[in-house]
Every structure is written in C-alpha cells, then in structure tokens.
Amino acid sequence: MFILLLGAPGAGKGTQGARLAARLGVPKIATGDILRAAVKAGTPLGREAQRYMDAGKLVPDEVILGLITEELAQPAARGGAVFDGFPRTPAQAELVDRTLAARGQRLDHVLLLEVSDDALVARLQRRAAIEHRSDDTPETIRTRLGVYERDTAPLVAHYAAQGSVHRVPAVGSVDEVAAAIARIVGQ
Ligand code: AMP
Image (tube, rainbow, N blue to C red; front, top):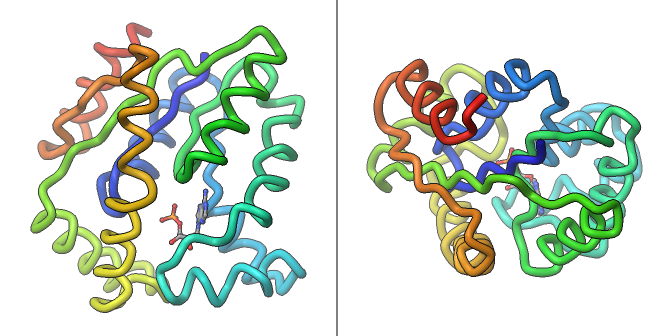
C-alpha cells in the first residue's frame, strides 16, 4: 500500500508516518530526513541542499527528482511505502504518479493532516527547543509555511481530482490522530 502524507510543516507527518509505516510493515520515505542526513555527512547532495533548507525554501526539483527516483527504486519500497515530505511540487507529484503507474501501482491514500496555523507555529517552536533543527527558527518557520501554501497545498487539488484525498483533523493526541488514520487506511 502506498500512502502519501500531506500537510504543513509541524502537522505531524513524521510522527504519524513512522507509526503508520511500522503498522503496515512498509518503509517510511522522508526526503527531509534523507536531506538532513546528507547535510550531516557533508555529501555533495547535502552541500547543495543545505542553503535552501536553512532558508526554509524548497530544494530545487533538479536535485529532488533524482532522489525520489532512487528512493522509489529501493527493493524495500517495491510493495508499498509511506511518503512523508514529498511530493511537494507538481513536478514531483508527476514523477511519483508516473513511476508508480509504470509499475501498475498507485497512491492508495493521500492523507491531508490539517492543523491551524497557530497550532503549527506552536508545535514548530516546541520542536525547535527539542531537536535544534536549523530551520525551526521563527523567521524560517514563516517562510516554510508560506512555501507550503504556495507550492505544496495545490497538490491537494491534484489528488482530490483522483478521488484519493482524506482530510484528517490532526489536532488531538498522537494516539487519537493515529486512530483516525487507521480508520481511513482500514488496516
Ligand atoms: P521536512 O523535514 O519535510 O520539513 O523538510 C525540511 C526541508 O528539506 C524543507 O524545508 C526543504 O528545504 C527540504 N525538503 C524536504 N523534502 C523536500 C522536497 N520533497 N522537495 C524540496 N525540498 C524538500
């Protein structure tokens, strides 16, 4: 089963994605995690990505499309995966759709985690205090929320047209949101 988690930064995609992937027995693929690991390791990918990440901007599609292609080709992701943090642009969505279609597969569910802007900012500020991510500063948080609205939120319409979007009010406890997701996914 292939599941896409959509939602603004701070909506809980990472937390819920990890739980869902474990329950379904499929990998969670998070481009943000891969990029952060690349930055830490100082690889060419990391060096290229870091300035965009630190500014709260999207890493260009020229860089990300290759990364997505590689990740989808992993044997572990052959039968299913939970996608966290991608696709984030129309070009990325098209690549994912096309790659799965070529394998006779499709996104089974697109889950849109919905949280109010005030709650997102509060969550991201809490995370900043715990994880010390370089892109959880107040200014970068604002930029990232704006980038989400402009570049990524329009993907909801793209997937809604395919009839696969479920809106999940992601406001209760982690367990409550996980239960709501489990009801939708039905497993
Ligand atoms: P995330 O952990 O998903 O919030 O991603 C952190 C940062 O990594 C983002 O603000 C972007 O700079 C970059 N990033 C992660 N995934 C993508 C993607 N699919 N496309 C472009 N940039 C990305």
